[in-house]
Image 1 (cartoon, rainbow, N blue to C red):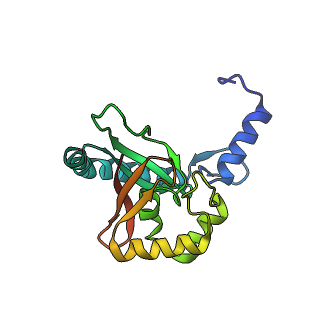
Image 2: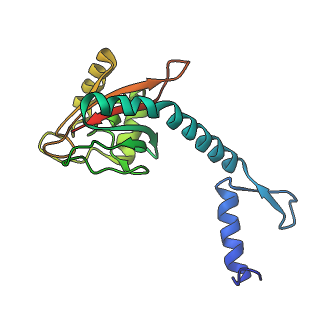
Image 3: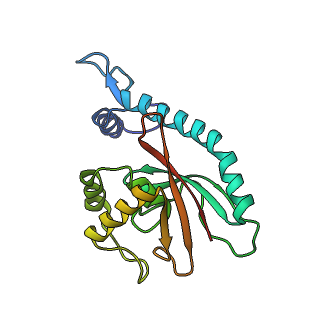
Length: 191
């Protein structure tokens, strides 16, 4: 009544939120709910992201100071590269990205650094969900070629984007590992 929505509309919204884990029914035959586990999960992710940004921001600034190029901090989200933090170059010509942006992982340095921490099965799931679309003539669009590239990233600890997302744009990236040795993020500079 307070929202001005019809009861059937509210019921559909609540049913969807319950099915997705955002609400839990507290009494089986009544419309009594509490916040679900998915809300707690999102809160933990948000909290970890804030901490990761706080810890990584000085390193991003050092990259900008040392290279004069734009630096990024990215994580995997929805099988894509999610831009968690960024410091722009002071140059007049610079890369146009924004915090919160999502890009394919197979064609960016930070994306490949993130993919390098995944098993072949996990990489295949990303390919199944997102494909390997071509952005430039240099974009890797073949699964085998991508897996070979990821093997090189694991050996060197560095990932490159050689004009694979945008002609004229290059990127050098490295994975960030947690205390268990798992890739949790990637840092890069692009120009």
